[in-house]
Image (cartoon, rainbow, N blue to C red):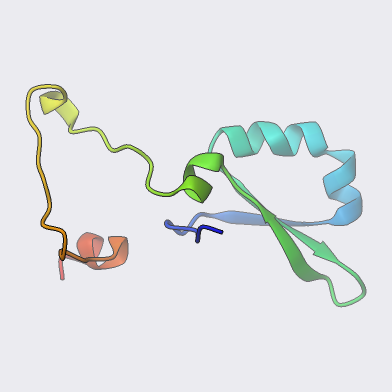
Length: 89
């Protein structure tokens, strides 16, 4: 099973609401939202529904105006998390 690669803003809803609004929830997931489903008296999250692109791994990133004109390659041992990259570490 693949891990979630990018933190998402995540809604949490109880099972009853999830069942009642299932089609709306799927529309939101298609737009990139993630949803945690809680269950029981303690309302503990028991499942997460997220976009398939986040489950499968890294979504394709565009190179902006240089798309299809430029490319880059990272060395096999290069490792940096998205958080480190965004913080400039």
